[in-house]
Length: 96
Image (cartoon, rainbow, N blue to C red; front, side, top):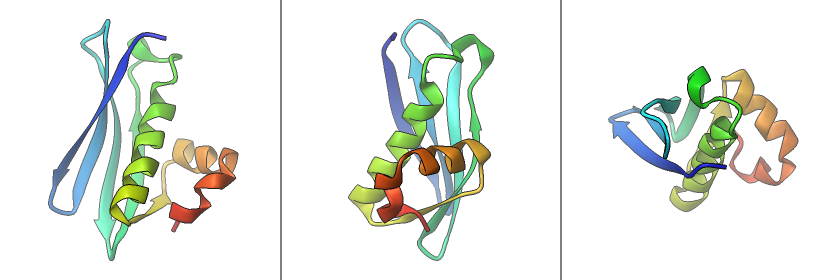
């Protein structure tokens, strides 16, 4: 797999994780909003030009790692994030 770098961008009570793929100028995104210490994962968007490379999964993994490091919980509103949590019962500690 080509290198993927994940960055986090926050503005108040909302933000997104962005996936930058080494051989493309396209960006994958996982957007969220926060209420009462819970981050609601709203949308996972991966352009077709970088699809099929595990980018969406890396975005969710970054959010889970961030939740563990910074003490927030995740409520998966996005269907992709919900399925990812079902596939990873070891993430139950950060699921709201």
